[in-house]
Length: 135
Image 1 (spheres, rainbow, N blue to C red):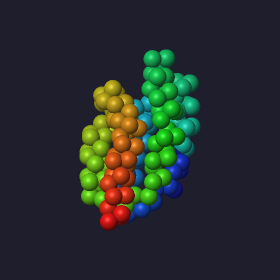
Image 2: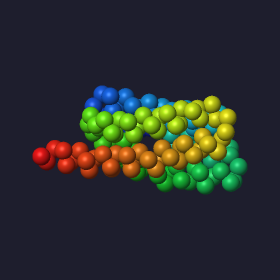
Image 3: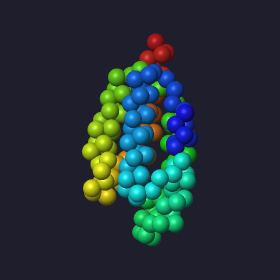
Image 4: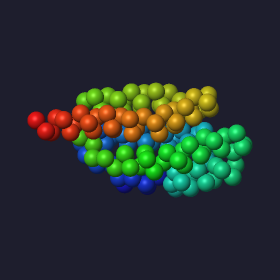
């Protein structure tokens, strides 16, 4: 179980490993961006609400609103699917370039993209996988 995100990834080892790496990168982005550490993402967001300027609270509101949806998708059993893994690896490549948070707006964009793309990627490949298993 990934304690910080509050989810347990299941399924194909390679897909789980890739998604876990992407989740770790986004955790590090959060920590490096704001120099705050916490035991869970919810705790992290709550700490940040107390510390960040008002204009950044929209970002945290977005994270709070999207978190239940992302967690639901992270619980999907990941099958081996080359396109799924490639999509996750592409997100890893993009996000890992911002890990130092030298450009805070780019780091925030990576976090926002994670919250948007994970459900999209899994939905896209979940549909394809369902088709494969029907044959």
